Length: 460
Ligand code: PA5
Image (tube, rainbow, N blue to C red):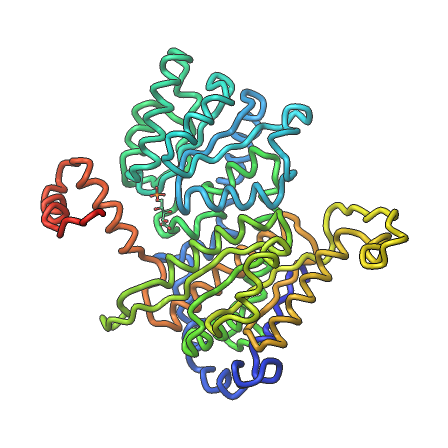
């Protein structure tokens, strides 16, 4: 088993009054069954098309592998232009499965350097242009809607530079990943003849890592994308059943749902591995954007959700853990541990005369990080703060696929338990529309008038 899920420290038996009683889980078995049946009934259709991605992409994967081999042979740099669900997954998988100093060793190892733009900070774009030569670079523009201002502005900047520097061959530097049926990017792709991959209609941005959004950048980096999909299918099959004691993602969702109802409004994601640091960023979007909703499916105003917070073990033991062990009982802390690190470093001898340092000598850094994780788990449990642990036997493409699918299923189940629309993002759309209006986009005049009529802020 590549991934183990341990929720004991969310239970009354381990943390007393702050914990969940077994009887509370039993009483909600019918709701768990309903959440499971909902996902099963709709998988592969509507907004649950992501659930079938491990099984239905043989042709796409073949095309991705061929394209990846071609771009590796032709270019030195792979740049993703995208934001949100079109950037967080590629960054998280890159960070998890490539060397932690990848770009520093890429040339020497014959690998492509990898960059994700993910913002419209002008200094970030200018800095990227300082370190890459566009002639050696392939740009993967990823936007499902083909309309996101951030991504389209990145695209326009790059196309202008490519046209100036690469002449008539500029279009071969662009690969578009977008909707097959809607948006501006697909129209541009057809007009300019870009190599194009499609984001299936029922795969939302934050559930898209296992489609071409994530698979193409990963394959270009030499990551085993077949292993990634295999891992996702392993987890999907493990979560086959409506009994939460046999379906880990369902138990995770159900215990989080109970925790939310007990006022645990914060979900801290704390991997104890630098390579999983960006998995916490990816999780924050998945959990926050999916569950943070004003209304439930019956139209009631609920303002529900659980605020995701990213944290890194052991680094944040020295900044946030004081709050987690002694602060309010408003959180569930998820520790992600790794049993076997891919590399280890021994802590050298040399402090024999200092007893309070010498105890470290002869141990390894993996022993130290894992011991500190267990110690934090102990401190959280002792102070009766809800915590749970996800343990990976090691970090590889398969276990990462398991982890991604675990969180996606947990989110889908939890959204159903909360009776909300897990797959929309009206709050994000509101912000996108306001940007269009403020930038004077045609068709957004009414929104602009609304914004201009808003009370003026007083600055002191
Ligand atoms: O999850 C989502 O749908 C969003 O966060 C999108 O990923 C994000 O807004 C980017 O959208 P797009 O891929 O259409 O550019």
